[in-house]
Length: 212
Image (tube, rainbow, N blue to C red; front, top):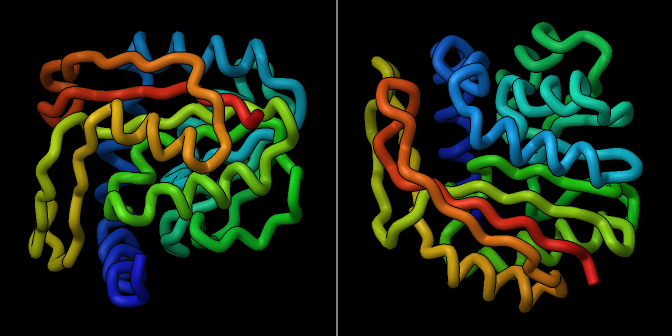
């Protein structure tokens, strides 16, 4: 992801932060499929977990509440990180770029990346998954969620704010191939239809992978 895309994405989410919290923070209440995936992840992981692309920290909070004692969050947007800290006392959040994490090798036992790769063009997937592989311990788990498709949707305005942001849709097979190229073993690929009146009307993909 080049510097212009990174800057535009960061600035856009900084502007959207308050609206994003209102719309997204409570959403897991209405997504039983996602909760089950996170429950299964929490039951298997042994050690510290990062919610990568954490937004307001709702996934990190869910994992903490469901058995993951060591959890942190990283997001590109400093404004969202500030709100995550406010909403989730006791969980560490910091700003960072998932393509260049300021984290030592083999630090985490697990990563959850819910809709955080959707702003990274296809050409950057092997690089970002390689960075995730670097910071995971051997046998570490990675759970990735994304929008299924092939299109790229650009917004210059969203929720009443001026933005410049692209949402990339991906086929599950291409995400899986990028994960394998980065050194992961793909364990599970699942898709679901959107929950009406809960989320954007896009098909959802989830992949569970393991660091070889």
